[in-house]
Image: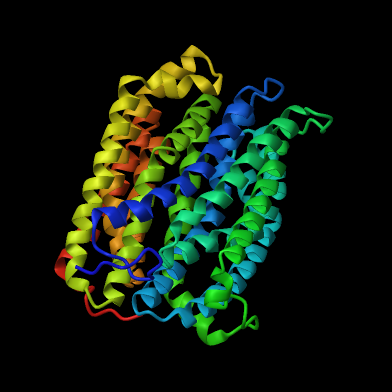
Length: 453
């Protein structure tokens, strides 16, 4: 077994290496989820606008669609960087990173354009409550301006994780979190001489937070000599060859993550037909997925990076052992979290400042969601092992099949049969099973071994 040094670009196949990579990633994912969580708590206590917490569900998922596209670009770039790191080709890493920024800027322009042109029409045709609809549209036309900052900020994940330097993720994440909490408080409630912008104040606070995170992390990258080591911005002109190579790997992941969150947006639009309480409960459940799920997604990101790195080193025979080790950690952690949530569900729900009736309606949904989280801990590891192998088209096909089944179930349960939201949320069980089983079969088949990227 290889034993790379602390600063080596190549990873080892050990529990220590997994934790070393996964813990900083989980922290980096956790802090933005805390931001969303705190936004919802603040809005839940903003009594002047009782629709704020319900509207937060729709707008939050909408913005996640575009964030997910950036996440797909990030994952594809991360796979490429990890492969070049495993091959010990640092000169290629800077070229890939710089060209990915051009792609991110182009995608953000597209997202802003769609939010001002197409989105209002879609929302007005699907939402029953006109006040909620206009509130959501206005919020998003502010919030979407943070997208260029978010995309460039996200790409630092691909770089730092791909070169086995994930420990530096925490600094930018803390700066983002602190900025978001401070300006949420100041702008939602109008404190410290700032205007009281209520629901829209949360949008402005989030943009400021993304900007602060971006500035901080790139200062760290420069200060640690990473920019110089990999010559990140030496070739600033658009290079179509590199852009095409990045998109070849990233595009299926971008489509995959986008349609995944679009299906969730579809879920929330249909939940709105069941009333504002059901929508508010579902928004809180989104946070339940987000907060404990940070560990799950950290292990998933670790999987794709370490699988790609090991293959780049010519050690593909060690990949099954790596997957088993990551699964052991991922499933164990999420089982502990889900057990605690089911023993004391009120501790999670009470901070949102809602009524006892709200808590009573939310607890059965929480039972369903925690079950889905266990399935997610299996599904994400196997799906990201496919991604790490470079077979991103297979990843896309698996996700597309899962989403088709998910949307069909959501429509039948929410609209056709008009079932309870607990039954509707069981769609998550179907989704993660439909992802886990084919991904596991594909990795066990060995068909991924000869893929080159």
